[in-house]
Length: 435
Image (cartoon, rainbow, N blue to C red; front, side):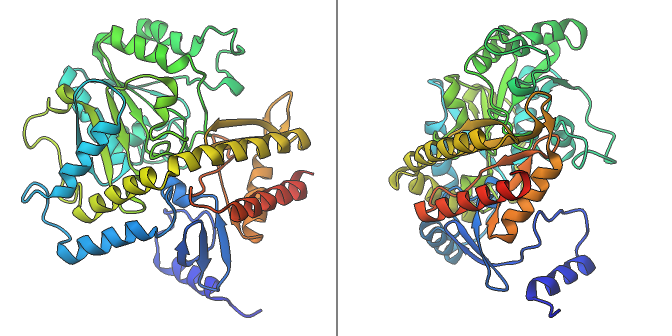
C-alpha cells in the first residue's frame, strides 16, 4: 500500500513529538476555512469540533485574518507592562460591557483558559484573604498545577502529576441524568446545590472559602447542564458567606450557547468570569472579567505576564466581537441550536443508544448508553462512532467521564448544506455502530 502524506507526517510525529500531547484524529491539516478543514492529502472534513470550541466564528474568518495581518505589520509585541496599546484597553472595555452585572467591572488578559482560571483564583484569594476553593465533580479547568487540582477527572489530566495544590475541595455537580444524590428533578429540591450547606459542616468552614468555581455547562465533563434553579441557589449561598463566585466560560462563552455568555441563561451576575478559546478566533488569549473592587484588590505588579494580552491576539478578539455582533452570529447560534435539538430528538426516538440529549444552543450532547434503564455508558460505541464519522469526512468529539458523550462544537458560520451533511454522516454512523 502506498503511504499517504498523512501517513508520512504521522510517522514523523511519532519520531519527533512527545507522546503526551494526544491526537484525537490522525488528520494533518493543510488549510481550513469556515466549517471545513482540508488535510495534506486533499480530503475535506466537516468540522463539528471547532478546535475544541475555539472556532465559533469559523476557521480563518476574513475579518479576523485582516485584523491579525494589520496588527502584525504595525507591531507584534511590546509587553503591555512596558508599553500599553489601544487594543488591550478597548477589548477590556467591551468585555466589561458584555459581562452580566450592573456593578463596575474590570478585565485583565492572559494567554490560555488555564491562566485565566489561575488569575481568577489569585484575585479571589487576595481579595478575601481566604485560602480555600470549591470545585465540582466532572469539572475541567486546565492543566497547570492549580487548574489541574481544580479539574476532576484523573486520567488523562491528573494521573502521575501529583502532588496537587492544597485547599481545593470538590462537591457533586447538578448532573440530573446521573444524579449523585439518587433523586429526580424537579422533585429533588436542588439537593446538589443545597448540599453545600452540609459540606461546610464537615469539610471546610465557609469563612475559609475564597471562591466557588463552576462551568455553566461542563465541557470535558460531558456537557452537563444544570436546571434553571441551580445557579441562582449557588449564587445565593456564595453571597451569604462572602464567597467569590467564579464562572468558567472558557468553552461555553463567546456565543456557544446562543448567548454571549452561557451563564446569562441562569440570570445571575457572577463576581468573576473567565473566557478563552473562541474569544480570539484561534489566537492565544484569555480574559478575567470581574467586579472592579475584586479585580483591583491585588497590588500593582501582582498580575500579568510577558505575553498576556498580546496585541495581535487582542486585535483578533476585537474582530471576533465585531463578527459575532454585526454578522448576527449569536442569532445564528440560536438557530443552530434549534436545528440540532430537533434532529437529535428525532435520533433519540430512533436509536436506543442515545440516553439523553442535553445542552443549550448548539452546545449540545448525546449521552450514549448500552441500556436506558441501567444507563450503562456506551464508551466503545462512542469511540467507534467518532472513528466512523472521521472516515466519512466528519470530525466530531466525545467527552464525559466515561468517554460516552458525543458533543457538537461546529462553527456558527457553517452552511445549512454543510450542517445537514454532517448530521447525515452522524446518523449514518449511529446506524452503523448501534443500529
